[in-house]
Image 1 (cartoon, one colour):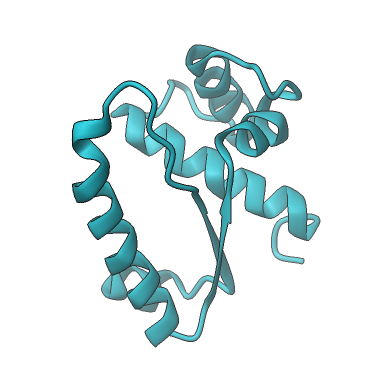
Image 2: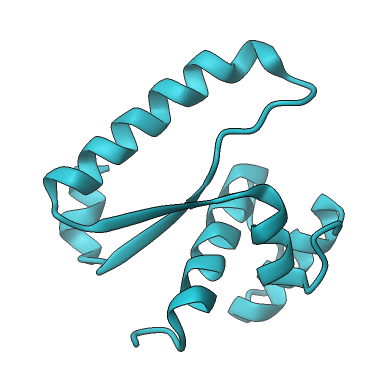
Length: 109
């Protein structure tokens, strides 16, 4: 993560807040991964904000109740991609980045 931050030099980042409903068994590994990500951003002095799943859905699709497939399709459309990003986690990460950009204003602003 630190290498990616150094390479791409973002001025901020966004990530989904921890939320488990169905797959509680993955809570600990996800929490650990989020800790590593937070540490990398902190060491790089890059702001990192968390957004709820509903906030991300709202920012990307216009509906806080959007289904996963709708959010994935909107990520594809917003970013002008030929296909929906794979794996699903890639689309989720891009949706969080789009949410962050929406809260900041135009990209690069």
